[in-house]
Length: 70
View 1 (spheres, rainbow, N blue to C red):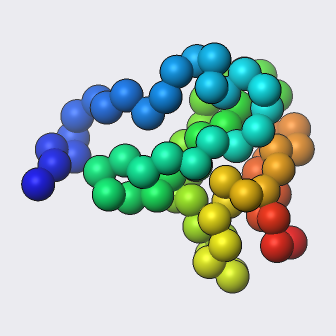
View 2: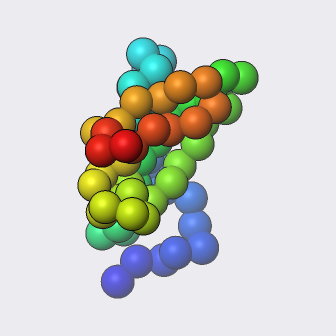
View 3: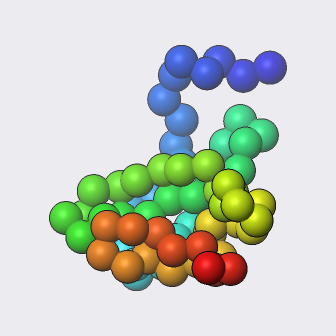
């Protein structure tokens, strides 16, 4: 059981510095972390809604995360 309305550490700042998406499991949920062009950290469900491929296998282009399948 997890407390969902709380803060949890998802990663270190240096882990998001190379521009590549970072896949993690938080509270038993797959999450992908990346930075947009302004340097803001973004977290999304790590799953393409079309083909179910992990988005962490994709690439960051500007402010968007491109699925590795598409």
